[in-house]
Image (cartoon, rainbow, N blue to C red; front, side, top):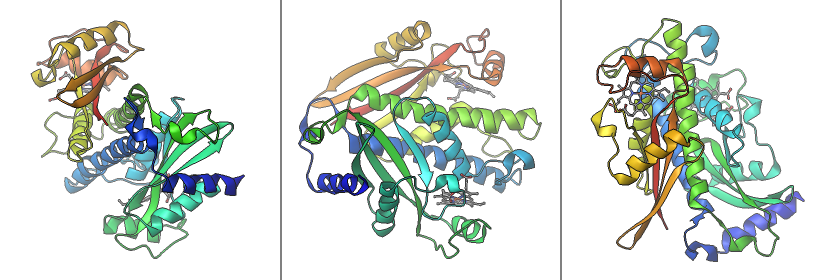
Length: 357
Ligand code: HEC
Ligand code: HEC
């Protein structure tokens, strides 16, 4: 069975998918690129603007036993916690960080295909390794993106960690990979190559799930925990201070990181009651969408549009007051036009947009 699966994988690697030209769908490989970009943006924001910022300010470090030590989570732990949050929602897509030489056995490959995939990205780190695999009667698209030792700190910590099975990592080495697993549905071996794509609504749900998980982990396990322990506070003007950025700023920083990748993927945080006037709805669609998710918070508000020959997809998801911190800060902020938010209220929306191929 395993070798069969891998044969299928190779088969698809060499045959360009005819489905790429099909209307309105997003090729699975592009969907995985979007998801990977959002995962990377969240981790980069966390490691550069939270961990490195607070270390530079002499305020707080990151450590493995962060709960006990009352410190910051390591970036790998941030990613793992966010992926657990997203994976537990049962939306179909799953992602996680893993390695052939894991410090935590939980991050080891879980199948022969995952192991082979990791070996491939170690050999050829310039592109993700992708394949298709059947599991319990369904087909899945899987992609592994290399995770590279971009700085000497990665190397020093891993090489010296008592659980590390490998002690000679160098800067630039592939240390592991991020795997993204996308369900394609029930297909026979014969027609699987014809539908190599996902509906834009589904892809937007996946992107939104990663964003939402990152911000929830940041709000709960960084901001709320450290504020409750009286260790640090979040502030709008955090840059030159021993302070954490606001949860909204975390999302905006990730959005800026995504934009620079030029994938055609973009997101914003908007509201009918914005503290920052720049976050108010920019057009009728955004206004209608915010009004809609306020009363129908289960269903995102979507739109297909065309500008010249380019086609776009947009979806607005409700942004909910998940902690008391959201409510207290907004109600008490001098710039807030609304002072009576309560827990679980829809406070605004997350707008996800991308260009359709
Ligand atoms: C201060 C120590 C430290 C630093 C710095 C560090 N890591 Fe890790 N890394 C860990 C720990 C601890 C884990 C296991 C986390 C867990 O429990 O899931 C981990 C997990 C990982 C994993 C998943 C596989 C595994 O080993 O469990 C990868 C891949 C990884 N790190 C890559 C990196 C890269 C790339 C960098 C630099 C950008 C980096 N790490 C920086 C400590 C560190
Ligand atoms: C410590 C204060 C603080 C906390 C905590 C906080 N926010 Fe905000 N929030 C702000 C500020 C300030 C802005 C404006 C940021 C900017 O300049 O774009 C903002 C922006 C927003 C926006 C965009 C619209 C606007 O008001 O400009 C939404 C939606 C939002 N926050 C929701 C939330 C949610 C949901 C939470 C909890 C997960 C939360 N906020 C936690 C202060 C806070």
